[in-house]
Length: 201
Image 1 (cartoon, helix red, strand yellow):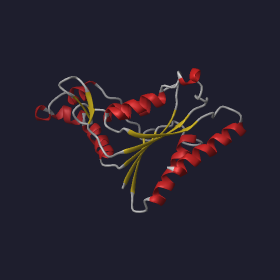
Image 2 (cartoon, helix red, strand yellow):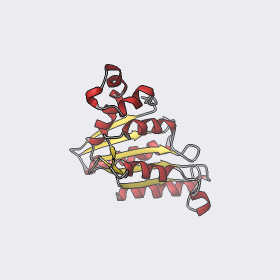
Image 3 (tube, rainbow, N blue to C red):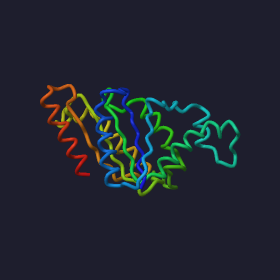
Image 4 (cartoon, one colour):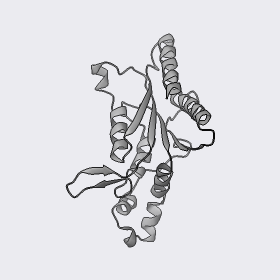
């Protein structure tokens, strides 16, 4: 059993999403004492955005690769190998400006790759190429997005649900921690609820 953990919060200290991910990892390791954990902190070790040569490499058959294209897609190859070799994926991320942090988007742009993690049928339909991976997504938000009005502003969870589904990861459990900017007592209750949800899974 292998767990791949992705941490995307720019806060290294006092990060709610990181703290919940620590708790999740501890509980997972108790349940899987022989399992291994790979942690990719994409803030401490930033992932560069894809560029011209990276995109060219994504759409070039491997037999036509030049040394430049091999170099440009090397990181993508590494990140995809980490993903496809895991049994469980844990993403911990805050919501920034109603969406994913740019650091997480950079990781996504490297692992969502045509003919590697997703394909397109002759009819033009997308299909995922990864399998047997369960994903857990810990999110931390300042507001509460339970109402219809606020839910319309949440581009974090729907996006991650869609993008993971595109590459074939359809079993996704979201573990949200909301209300970080609310009063301390309300937030404490919400944090306890989030911890209980993690314990339950």
